[in-house]
Length: 273
Length: 294
Image 1 (cartoon, rainbow over the protein chains, first blue to last red):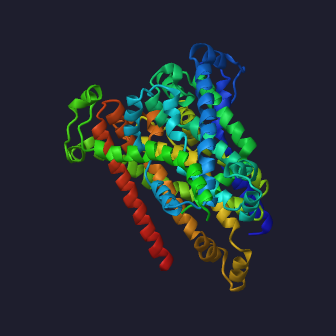
Image 2 (image 1 turned 45 degrees about the horizontal axis):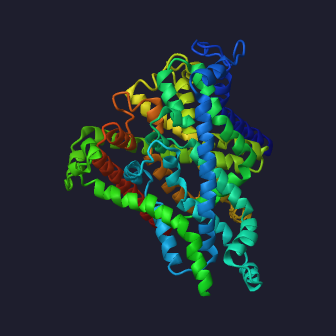
Image 3 (image 1 turned 135 degrees about the horizontal axis):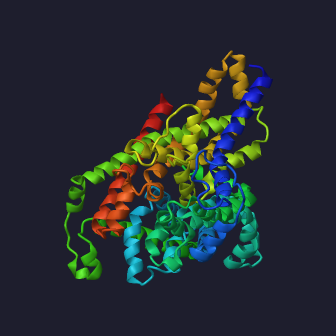
């Protein structure tokens, strides 16, 4: 095969795969602007005959999507702040501060990665019920505050901070907190963005745990509300697609802007084996 | 190291460690205890009703046909989905890595986009794409003269349909990992193989695949662990049906625990799933080691 025909074949194949991959998302956007019932015809229309915002209006006026959007936004933002608060200092400690039993504790943490989170869910639910946190935002957030992946991510990155830098600050009389704030945190900049976007997306997209904890409709997150809505409104594909657009837009936008950091975290996480 | 740094280390690490100990390790141990009790709605109301039942939850589970069905469905999902997903990831990574490929960044972003989407939202989209009469998928199949398939209504097709959806959603993740591994293969290796007269296929087999072997085995283990945790797809798309053909182990656990409130028995389900995943992971490590020695 000549180089030219190889180029055409390979680029053509990629273009076809990219179109097929994006097709469901493009179709969603198009249908969300169709009039009710329009998508349920044969052959399936690709574009709305007359674009309308009716589905979005109904979504926010009738189904309380605005409320669920605010819930998801609040929970994902809080989860991100908490994750930064807990995981960053721990990741730094495991990388740079020698303390008794450090390596053994870290091995136990890594070993725990093999246990699927669902094993802990039922007792966790009972614990939260005991302390009155079922059906609260706090109940959703508590188990996401600290996690092994976050600690691991920060640790890998913090290892590259030169010891001399920290030692010099200590010799100058800086305490450990001061060293952390004025030297470590600025040096960790990029990985903080990575951890933040991972936590935000993870929280926004999470389904099973909020489904279990949040029984009250008013507190529910977008995915839980959307799943419930799709069971009630099976026939209303146009309305449901508007709901999907509202759910997906923030995460896709965030990913497009911070893609580099996301991929970096993904690759760091995959070499842990 | 000075005592100051040692104390600081514990101070910096302990908030996260306490959270993980209290809200992960403790519940995992509690799940083990719970799985040998008859914790149910009565115990939920009054803990005095709780009784130790030994292995009875596990034994009863093994006599429950729906549990075996859920296990079989989950295995089918893993056996169909994991190889398909990895093949798709590897294939697209190779295309992206080819020297003649243009617009690599844009293609990578497009193929990766489904990975960051919210599972529930895209499952809702696919439910309509898979619609028997108005769905795009049957419409496209019609171009090739294939009759409409009742994807989510036919017990034989519901799981394959969910596999297709899951592969679409996930393949970009491993694609990025493969792409990074491919870019790390030194070009000299290909040069040397060409000098030795290796064909393109031989170069792929002896240079590309052998360089990717560690990545392949890691990706296999991680992907399998993910696929065993099938839940939201059937929850949104089929509610475990038709004829329970898409009820997964986790779906079964969810219903047992949070629909019927048999929390003792549901904990036993969680442990059985964990043990199966653990065994399969060990098996994969073993196979990978044999393979790399051979």
